[in-house]
Length: 160
Image (cartoon, rainbow, N blue to C red; front, side, top):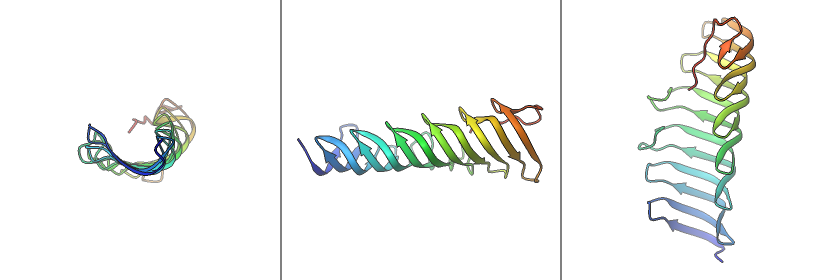
């Protein structure tokens, strides 16, 4: 069994630099992909887990975006912050809150690049449940949201 620090270059160009325990990727590490994506954080039995940061590279589907927070079984899971930097994916938006399976799920706050802010419950990346929408001009709506729409249907939110 391999134990200790290791450097593994996979056939597909991915690289793992970090701890190996009982022959598995376990401990602190840096993992890079040919797309330029880079993960720095904890691994356990080959999966991203606990705390980490993933920065998406120039050849990625989400170039420049960054997530920092909790991971479980390789997914965004727990509490974390996602910053959109890609021009094609809502550059300037920032979400801080709870995640489940790579999606905004639970309590959180999403600040949009245009200055609007949504705080409260999220489900599947949109406000769902009690929340507060504050427009950049200071106008507030406080109440319930269902699948991204306010009860009075004056506010419709599109998932980033």
